[in-house]
Image 1 (tube, rainbow over the protein chains, first blue to last red):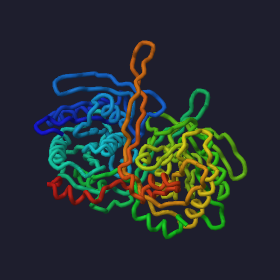
Image 2: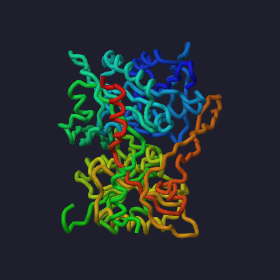
Image 3: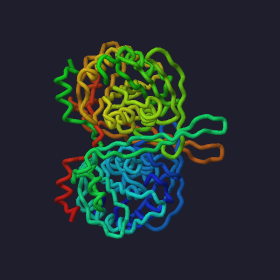
Image 4: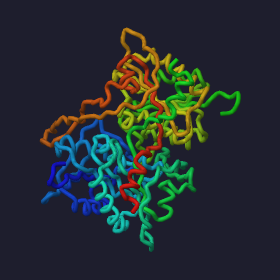
Length: 260
Length: 260
């Protein structure tokens, strides 16, 4: 980022460019710099870090004004980040903000999340990147309180940057009568989904299956987890990174003779 | 796993059920237990940990014999694991093996990989899971030497299990005149892709873009990385896990006043 120049901010999401959540994020981000939005043309929830390798991509400029451009893209959230950097902007954004997702990306949801897939893509590139999500799937969810916290978080990220190859996974509780209790820095809660497939048939009696499931929290009492923070009306921030190595296993595997 | 019973082994991949790589993996896996294959009906490379949320899934039994079943599924590799566990098998497999992928999943490729998305899905569920990949995209690649190492690795995993929430990311060098030099336990190489979009047009002059790129290794000299091992004709094993928290950042973010 050059001195005295407005930061260049890339915004994306996984619910599509016209979701309410991304509009609320754009509104905040525009206070801090020049904003270029490159977001999926349709909802791409659950796309994780998927990229489009065997098909072509397209993108379309939809809106343009001073310090603002909005593009839709036919790809995944990670595709949006790549095509923004290497084809549309042809320069590196100073910051990347993804969301606000309609739905939780806390605990194990982070690994399935297209919102966070985009943030990880930024982290790999060395761009300070943050994914924002709110615990409501309502297309008209109330993001007003989240917006205040997003301002605070963006100001911190602009001031301090982030560690290399890391991003922030920020989740907001669903809005209730009470304002949020503040922010907690957390670790990712251990948990998993127990799935239940709902069977349905077409008119020729062929079977089709819908994915549904129930989340299980494997550490419900741990106050340092994101699930605990959210259940207690705190905004959770988990610093996440893209080195997936489980370092503790390295010596153990060597002792077990894998290299022999 | 019950005593004296053959282990139940789930096999999947991201290149599709009829790729040569998965056939070579099935051949090895069948020596160690009852094998159920649930693999994508078409190639799903680059799908990472994506799941199908807004569309239905289908699956088809294609082949059945003693201690062996082969299903294709319309979903992603992670969908294949979920639908196998909760709909087809309705019980937990004892082990999950994914691959053999036609192409590298070393370094940062691990985050984009459907092969590894399936292995992570097993790790979340507590199933000892391994993803296998070979550094060649040739549909008729030579997997014969890889198969010998897969036997060794499967025997170790059956004997010792793996740490909770971890999986192994195993990559094999492309076959040359020389046999592999052995196995190295490694960490994930720091690296990234610098993309180049190739522009093409349809007959009405609309633009389309193909993703292409060049990998950059950010630690080429580090002998503990998977890229180093592979470049030196070793099989690389990186233990990987699904807790994406960057623990080193937690105190730093607290000091920077994010919680204030």
